[in-house]
Length: 549
Image (cartoon, rainbow, N blue to C red; front, side):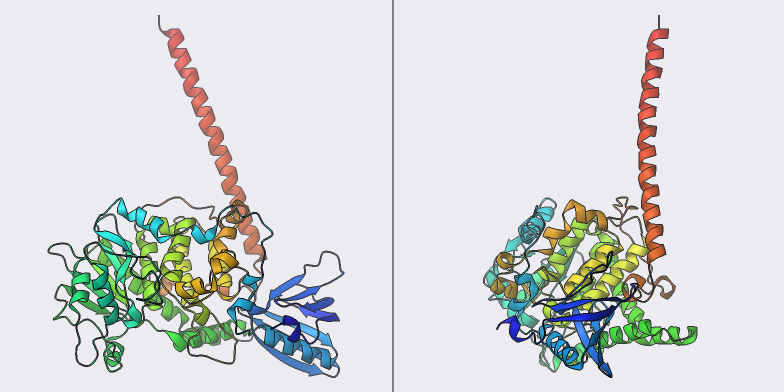
């Protein structure tokens, strides 16, 4: 298919653009295969370049011969275009709708994007499983790399290489995979070097109504326990939902078959409930008319902060089991690709200082989200404005980033990255020139040949010029476990995401710049003090030498 077939009117003059925090500007609107571009001949006017994949929905209005298109973006921005001529307006709207809903992934912009920057590091090879395993192998010999899923035959949503207990062979893993939802047998998610405890993750066991069991599954899970130790299974569904799953062939671990494990149910919502929550929240944030009571009422009715609290509470429980109880844990829900990954990731941010660095956090996203099979293509297909609701859209990753922001806000000196880093990840998960978040799992990315045909997001982010934008000036390495508060009073609306198009951040940005300048100046003064102290010590040493007979 040629993009030209979808573009009915490639160019319109005298279009007026209205967007947040900018004066209205008149210019020429151009449509390309992947971008909506508005450029003006006015001096000092920034051009608009908008990816079609960032468009969530459009509305059309007509007043006489003038047409208006309101573009609602996946990053929650709302843009208005005033277009002279009804026919041109309808053609532009029709073209945008077609170009923003392309079915084929290979027609998306990452396959056409050619970087204008020098590629210093190939991000596709920055966080390989073998490299991550090396970090653990120096501390333990109880685990091994398994290549049982080399052709994605055992589990289509797992990567080719996984970390499993050393004494469980690949044949046993194949049997366990047949007993777990989607073939997602328990694998290592995190090893706590302080006490040797581990976090594993998997899909639900397929026990069904007959209470089916799998000896290999029991052996694998018990292989992670130290002598005389108990473990915890954290099920991210309510007991009622887990019991209902048995009727569909799913279920949960029976205490009789897993006597050394205690099961805990922590209900975390998924799918359309989260999507509806996001829609209500964004609607509330965009409504500028309410009084205080109505605003607080709509914020509460969205349940967004309640979901944040549920996820953070479960992550803190997981971290507590590891660090304070000295117990290993297995985490799963139904598939093990959504709430499971939220909890395993956040527990590592609480427990592991490396996960709070820029590269450590990138490795975490690569390991616990991309390689672990979170279906980004499905979950991030639509955002808060789209009318055609599919079953699988859900802001699971945005909720995770929001939880990270809540912890960052409570521990502002413990993270090497800043809020802009999290906002950037949100934007690229929904619409990007990079191939990192395309596809639903490693198997799909392999078939699409993303490594050969697209650029990795990390290749761009990890350049020194970009890293400066994402580095937290307050960062001081903190090697301790950090315990965030999950009390309702401690959780706040993430204004940097949900209110950034509704009110200007000009003064906050200026205050941030001033803070950075003060910190830099303080470092310079500290360096001068150190030099003067050395010089003083040298002078005192010389005086002492001269005075001695």
